[in-house]
Length: 352
Image (cartoon, rainbow, N blue to C red; front, side):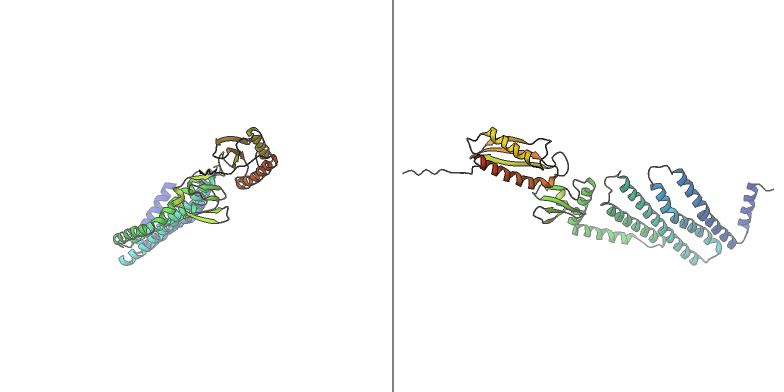
């Protein structure tokens, strides 16, 4: 009975001594066995080994790369078998170039699928803050463009096309486009940083350094749209926002801060005024009890003693409505209690 080594040696002798067409068929048969039998076996083994991992990214990668790897093995078999079938030099070169072109296309497809799986995994795990649902399309399009450019460059080299002139033209064209679209590019780059850093999100109540106040309705790569309290939607270029101070009222300890400035006439009982203001704040349903409302006597004004009523509300969108309600209540209580809210006056003395 023949041993395994003897069997292999006899097969090798037969393969090397037989007709070239039979050799080509044996090569393609071996490629089919590897592609359709061995690769699925190894893929299943890898899935079994990694079945207890925390994420499904490894399984998704195996699934995504299964078809491209099968095609690559078959194309390698074709490249090995082609010289064996006795084609003329011109035909052999053409068919090999076609096969290599298909090889490059399949490799590019595998890279694109891998990047797709990795980006989706980064979004799900949230480990990379720069990659999220809003920035993912940008990264996908950018990587797709780079892969296509690389694949085209490789195909040009396969077919013997001189790419030097093409690259020079592309460089000049890129510089021209860069100068023409520098503002757009600045907005897009700023948009990427805003989406990655997330100083605000859709639905946040923000105040910009320019004085624009409202609710963020959309965040795009080129601009951010803010719905003001006048019910107007303002579109602001991201490059402009990136250079401004941004106060996000929907995050942090200052959420829903309400401040009402009050002036009372000189001679008013400040203790009574302060107690009255605190009663008005406590009676308002939207004002939080913790932290407690406070009243501070801030300055001696030209015509009044100036105080500030400070309190907090749960929802930052209630700030303006609460201010209005508090002012109405203060005006009514002061009128009932005979507390004067002064206005600027000037005494004019005429000399005779």
